[in-house]
Length: 242
Image (cartoon, rainbow, N blue to C red; front, side):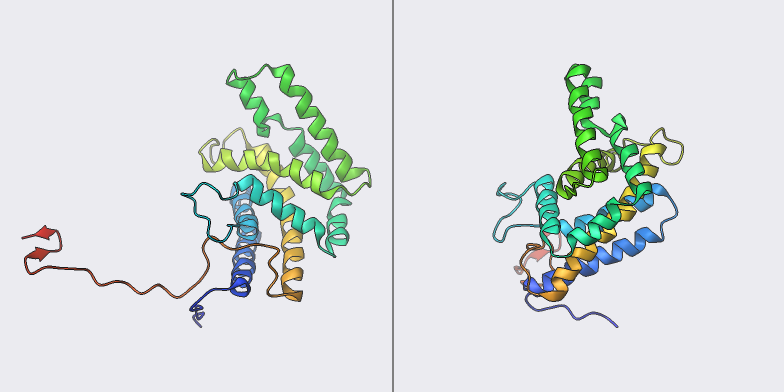
């Protein structure tokens, strides 16, 4: 049965759209047959969840949040929710997941600073210290029992964002590329943490369908706007005047 589109969207219909879209990509990711397909589907599911635009702000205006800022805001909201500690802790206590996170963090090929060195923008030793400090910070948040979830999410997704950019901007080769290791690790990290974050978001929206925590969608569902009839003159044709 075809879904009826709302004549005018509201925060309630936007929340419904957000959950439905994210869930659809999550399901697609679970059926994926390759690491690259799984990673991209899970990234889109996450993007559907955190995509945000301030009301009345357009891209052309240049005043909207950047992708990184949107993601940061989403992670902060996730960590503030009532059930986040319980559900995130369960993931973080998984030793296999922690090991995969370690693989991601120790792979310098998905650290942007490494590529700055390759391109000659920075000296390697300047970036190496930052790389190692970030790794230790995330490792501590994941394994030490301090439950600093926000620090861990920031650090891990900073690296996964580089991997995402390598894929969508044609920086890897399908199947036989040298990026197979980071794709495997990245998709395994995503398939564990993304469903939990969506579960936390859905719990909040389930309790309060009008929750404004998650912001406004850039592309809300709605009935198409009425089209204005084309203005024609007696001598005009489809391609101009006859």
